[in-house]
Length: 415
Image (tube, rainbow, N blue to C red; front, side, top):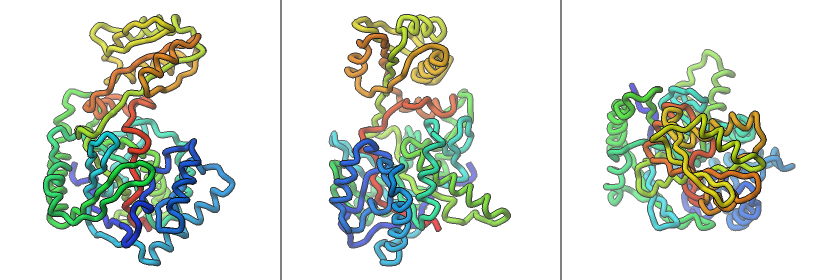
């Protein structure tokens, strides 16, 4: 890597506002729970709030969608004109998020270079998606971003920093950093605190990142595929939207130098997968309306090998264990999902994705059903899986619960 692809930004934060009303959870949460968003709007009222600057996915397709998008852009322009924001130039924000279980999840807000990010399968860019991007989910988000003067991120980007050289040194000096916010998030989102990282502290981080990026390939020697620096763990469709809008801008302005255009970049929060508060939970598979014994035999005949990934199956009251061939994927879920996708093209069956172990076992007791209890993914497997296999199978893992997703807080001008 010749230059860093995660950079300090001119970060916007509200001043003199009720931060509990300002910060709102990611738009792609509670998509089937309009009551949640109704409570958020009622709580925020007319106060400055990011609920007035985003479109919850629960409200996509509504009759008022076009009107709401226009109102979002007007609200952004009004907040800028009215001096709602204070800008912190060339800075990062170090964040600590208090979680439901009492743990604290650290992160660093900055901007990524969209020229260094790709979300298509087989990408070799320094920043990549972890899961397949659904193209149909991008246009509704583009309608919001195209006319927006600012962006608000809920993207969580991950680094595979075993030695904890990037974010953790900032945590060690947080007591001498200027504190930007410290409050309880609405709707049971936990506590959040943010500190300004600027000047020499930002330069020190940049230097550590330069060295980290130069050596990142050493971790993945012998692994097929091109090493990467960062993986998008949450909010990939939002980052893909920023990328799509930037590519659209370049297409509409041929020959122009857009290298310094603010739309070339997007705000994200960087987190380390090796932090103790970063928990990856497996997502299990159950297949309904199938011939379970036939499916199980086909899986055993085509995808098993001694010493493979251990995966437990359930049919009715019966259970057993398979060893899925490790040469077929870096992940157990990769072997299983590829098999199921191909098998169900020719045979009856419908897949569902289940988070809870007991729920999976219970559902597998239904007639004509089979369940697969997948092992938890080791954190190091995430990067190795994306590098070797391209994007991971859909529903590979879950990063925390709904209320633990990122809330909108920081912003940045993109026009």
